[in-house]
Length: 578
Figure 1 (cartoon, rainbow, N blue to C red):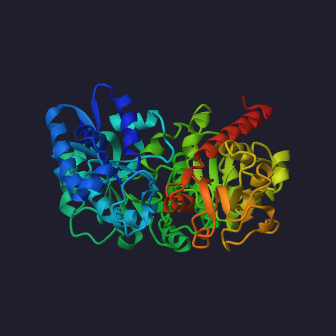
Figure 2 (tube, helix red, strand yellow):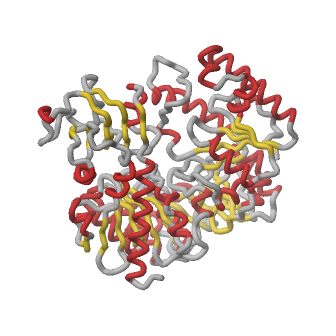
Figure 3 (cartoon, one colour):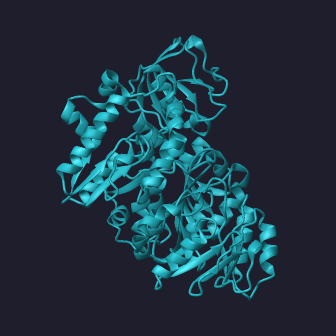
């Protein structure tokens, strides 16, 4: 093996390298930053301070070339700023990415390259240029699910390239052409789109691999003869009489349905509209289910909110696609391979708005894998909650982890509510294995673990809170509460309580939003405890700017998730699921 891992700052290349060493124990593994420190005695931060970024890049290149010259077999994790042009063409490059890459990340322990920019602005300034380079040079892209921390069977299969996908199409990109032989070996079905590949390229690919199943999808006017030994998918706008599949990519689902109605019974129909809400999603689903062998429904969105439905579609229809690039709603290779072979009777999801960054699917994966099921993430705007819940239940989603801003709204649904949920007037856990939803709240257990080291006489301020404020006050009744949108004390929190303007702890309980304010300079804090665990949290940004000790909400998340699984298991037993 001669493999290099590239990717954006904080994506998890070093952590993956450790897991990679467990998957490939016979291979030597090197973290490039660590090797530079071994050979110079300077960690990256110190190196940047003394010799600048240019000096670091020269040393980075030098050490990298030494490593590949000294070792026949290796896996090397590089820094985000490493020049991938240095990597010889015969060395495999894997682009490690996460769905949260575009959001930006804040670091407390890494060198800041441009002091005049905020940490997020610095990250975003370099993001686009680096992203293009990673995609261009990579031989394979691996989108890591949010929250993977230990060795993982599906990840091992992907990195070993021991997988074969026979129930979905892989859409070939220009960047895949130099590894086409590998793609042919890993996918039974490959899509060749006329808007992504030239006519000559398509003809040459089909000629080179005559035994492969290809689908030529016509997305524009073509000036070449499509090979006879392939399946064809013609968009409605470029229709041909010999089409095996007729598709509509209209932004309107109504227009798409009208276009495809003309060809019922003549070809397989593929509806791929821009779907705006759960009502439209259900409409597309019902249309597809009227003739599941001859219809496929592939909803699109601007931000990927229907990816979970595309996973469920694995069991509903014959035409599916897996992610080959930045196609928002297509499932990643990991997600597709992680799905059960047979459709489970029930499954679970984290619901909220937004939820794309949630670690809940990874955290609950083992729990549901034991049940031969899966756990996904479903974005539901508050105004679609009732419709969304009913449709999810219809599709078999009976386990739900509820996050902001839906906790209070879910509690107000018609349901059987636990004593804890009643006391907090909010629910973060749902079991719907019977006629009525069963609601519970495990935030108190999680929060208690997060703040367990706060002394009784400590001065504590809470910034924000929303649906979790009452829960936090039940654990820290003497905390001083501020509105994160006005910066003013909440009713009942008065300066006469002896707090003054200096606090031992700031509990950050506000989302990243244009409505969220930072505390004024007049308020002083020694520690920030963040209910969030994202890498771009405003709580993390505040701690970085003020140079305050920071504690992530990850421990709270894990503790409340463990309690959710206990609740689900107890309800399963009560309903005879075991």
